[in-house]
Length: 474
Image 1 (cartoon, rainbow, N blue to C red):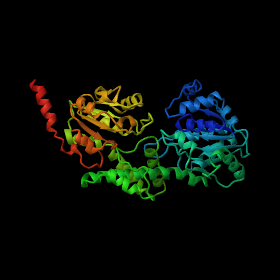
Image 2 (tube, rainbow, N blue to C red):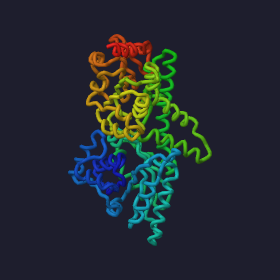
Image 3 (tube, one colour):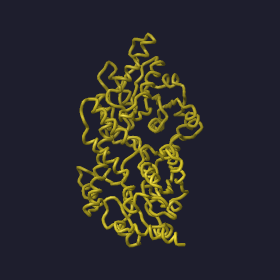
Image 4 (cartoon, rainbow, N blue to C red):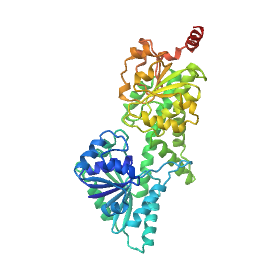
């Protein structure tokens, strides 16, 4: 089939690359000429494991190319995906200006029947608004024929595993309402995704409004699991229980399962924060409240500051003269995405209190510095932020190490080297990567989230004052 995808961002590129790999002829269009030039010259504007190779293969075989020409894209595609950004407004609702602008642009070039697919995560009722924009443009051109059908096909892609998620989907949700074009559209979408339905029927058909809400409901459910486990972990700290044992105990229940049960420093990224807020605002617009989802948001906001609270517990509010190592900047491993990353809150708060921060991320060093530069209002604070070339460089001379992102390269460090190079052998583990008993045996003060037997609970702030007094005396 001939497919056009409007938006060469994360969702658009993964969708386009994977559909091309299935043999479809794909055009991706983006208004950013520099991005299109990068893509046509074998570059990528984003990082996603395996995407570079996927694009190179399909570009070489002529199944995908990139353009800024909307007329070309509309003429090409039997199915046209809208995959542009829907950022949050100040009230938390989804900003649909890019989606609706694209709809109007498509309407200016329609000449024959097309299936218009909302791939972007959009609130309930967006398909109707897209339809209205399209129809208005056709009327301006004096065209009364129905040249389109707007449907919903939300994406369920995890950053860092997006190609696997697309090529081996749990389900394909398609929202399609009854109309005169129902049979034609149904056949086209069945053909488009036929590769995934050969052995098991993975497509779930429903009405458009239900499909639009399904994406928000799924992300809100996953966010709820994360915030719930973080609350249980915080309670475990107070009760002397161990969250890792609890996770295994409840995850063995088949009704619950093991996914999204890890305690940590809170969720971030482009989906969970944005989608939970949009769902809350959607309910408010209907005169209702999403009480559980609102609580999920509140717990997550608190959790992002937990490591800072523990630093203050050990060293006090004034962190002047202290140096902290931060391992991990991106909101999750295998991506350079800094959107809503807990590291941004943690580092800002440390710098505001006078600390010096040495940070390292295997992939998001440049992106992390740029994000933090935009966050910080005072240059003096930014001058105390240093981006290290390695994890051990970041930890050298540190008064504490904060583990923020669970990159695999952080799972098995040389603890003896860390102990020798740090000013204080104190690890505040925001992802529960390490065994508390093992670190205790090594003489390293440790505090995870909801973990038992934590030597860090007996860590003496007096060590700091002793070191400062010794330095003054000398």
